[in-house]
Length: 578
Image (cartoon, rainbow, N blue to C red; front, side, top):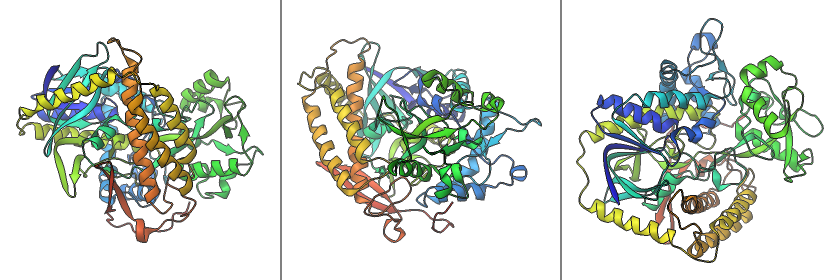
């Protein structure tokens, strides 16, 4: 086993991870050794798939906007579960991040007079989403990657799969990973570690997310005994292409697209009359599923999936080519549909995990109560700070990744400049993890891990989707418990060392099982409907009992649940109407 020492290690290479590495280097003026470790090639991180844009108040006078209004929209959109101090940080710092990205080369769409153009997004009072056509994530990643390559003190490790964090007492000192190229096991020792491993939407089958979004960092943190927050809140994006689940950006509705049922009716008037198609995602998703349930949907004969239509036919074809070129490319390639001539079949698909590793406002990972664990930060979708609460507004995610990428990068750099290296126990702990990896690689049971994953998807799709009920969730609870036990009898068919994706997939499936278990157990305990969590037996929001965050921590044989209050700074919860 190879031992690699760095001052700062960033695990994950999306927008949050690259931003963190850049600002850690800047803060140290190149004096610290920094590593970026990714299970993919850096530019294949899921952030490249972000389409619509990044939110921020750039021109308050022109747009009649303000940071206070952005905060209010975010808090209301969260169904009042967002921590309002964190939201204030988001809206204050987001404009600077957009300008930073502008300076390093992101080709924002611009108005004729040169200002960055901003489009309308769901739940936002005014247009405040900066964008680069409908490929915003790709252009942000490209610019960040180019910037990263200019720093001589940053090393990049592509295609290294991390399996566990190394914890010694009240500190995290690194992690163990294996190199996909040759299965060489490596221990990365760090003074500061930043988790930026993305979300876990692959616990479901129909999702807008890449196959790589398996919640690895979140699962590792949980297994290390660190708390996860609000895992019951999973966002379903209203408009995913049927049958593939590919994202059809909210920008398509921001640019004027309509949602229509099988009768051709523009149905959102019944659900959010003032916002129509630009209501928050939880509301639009429920509206679509309600239309389908009540018989006003259509059916894809190949997959059996029911859907409604996203209609762009009334838009100018030039507008589609200029502002939604990738959507046109996707629909043409996947379904041979020209969106200027035919409606697009869509339905809600899993898109974002509002919950994640429990952090404080500075992105430091908590260990219990008000105490954080030494040496560990989390940023981006794997972290729950919490700015999204029970429902994220579109385009706030890229803002979150950028803002807390910078915050955690600076914090990790400052910590690394004063923290001493880990003790001699590091190698012993790492060697124990090495043995576990080899044991799993050598397993020769009777079950394919892929069949277990397929079964998990069926359970989550059926019982933890847009609408939930207690009976279904308890069935899921039982079934997931059985699937977790069955992992003891799996086999890893590929015994080779060169690009053993079978071994990588097995670890990913283990992570998905752990996270689906936590999602389900957390959901069963929240006896209310709030944001993305809607339960038939508890149809209303219950601020008296449930204005609090769920904290899930590993315990002997199970999960220990506790609750902490939502931080309210000025906006009192009111009825959420659009």
